[in-house]
Length: 132
Image 1 (tube, one colour):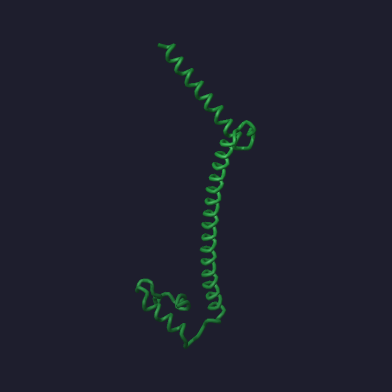
Image 2 (image 1 turned 45 degrees about the vertical axis):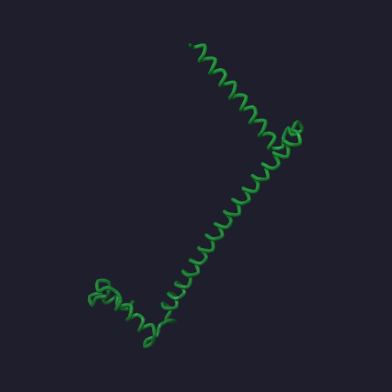
């Protein structure tokens, strides 16, 4: 019983060693080493496999570049919007966007009317009246 199991394990080990050796040889061939022993058909098959692999690598690389470009464009758009908002805030703080009897005052009143009562400035909060 042990001899049969031992023999099966020994055969399995030999098979795996042989498979490992064949894979190492194939890897060396793919690296361009020891290709003198290969026939013309084997070289053509290897060339086709390498070209297919290279094509898939280039496709993946192009996809990554497209995704990266799209992400950068989105970030750029967001930063431009943030810049516009901050520029408007700076203008308001400097008084450049302040119009006492103009459009901005009317717009502020409309915003106040649209806000829920709990978020409106209350009379007991005089320091907040200056903002709104």
